[in-house]
Length: 523
Image: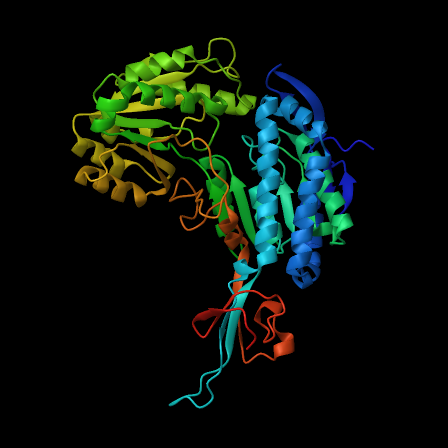
């Protein structure tokens, strides 16, 4: 049976009865296949089944969960060329990019498997009783992280594997012991079906409940609204636009029981080029900026949408490099149309100078590589220039002084990344700039370019609003698991009723904080 574009709900492949939408090839600008959208009834079925599966999932050992994750990664790889070819057809992304993204996807799933097997993410803590303490006895108190409950995950368009229905959010939620209901992105429903197939096979092999993972396909806002509104859902993972993320945040806040929405949204990722870098490395920085701006046709959440520097030749040299870069293809007509509208609106500002590119000349799906320039004075007085343009576009803000550069840094809103080009590490101006950016940014880079996110425990992929909905969370790296757990304390609880992580014998053999000191011993 072909499962292309189908939904997967509680162990069953289904063709929903909602409206139709098309899987689209952005390279040929033509429909690939017709897909059916899920309904509120499908949400009800998936959410209730996920809630019913949670007692079984909570009883699974860390070894069980690690085995499931490793098996999912194995099954993704077993999809072979079919996954790559399907992803290429639905996104227009090149083969090499998707092969690399598949490696990253499986790598991050296996990283969570290792984390779970290690048990450190549980952060087990034990404070032993002191019955003779005066003036009052001290009770025995123990705490660790527990699964939060069914998690809704919204797949992203720009990373169909690594941030798709089986990307980092789903991997983190499954690693924490939760059931996941994934809302597949309508840009690549057939790709999502293949990921669901891999997960379904792994669930069967590892003897997990069928409702451990469900995939709901659909376009429009109604399906996502129904999913976030359902009382069985305990948290949401989202990667996408500021408008989409904010809408989900508002829906979740209005529920009878509000829940957290961990949304990774808009970011202009400013790059600050200091005076010494202009003097010593201008040509290389111009070339590097151009390459970073066009990487992935500018459809990375870390694309440098803003360059802040003193008046110099940097803007013109970067524009020259951009004009030599080949044009890419946008992921879908909706993203392409939004970019073209954003460029048109910005060019309507008489104080914004177009250096290269502009409006798409043939079709919005093939945008021009564009660079614009504006004075710092204008930038500081026009908040519309703070908005992200999602595509191969950047804005250079030219300043009269380093002091004005610092003013721009303080004016910019929350971002995923900020970059500083300098070798003057002892300069007070650089230290001041770093302090300002550290307060509003999830990751600060030196002498590099923001595109590219290393998957490792120290990575932070998040930042203050509007970059994300929670400045304390990351959607990349093993710390992402912390979004989908809740901390539970047990006071004077009998040993046999405690979670394994807190039992006296330490059956998991993990490091625990016992009376303020880390230990692997029994208590």
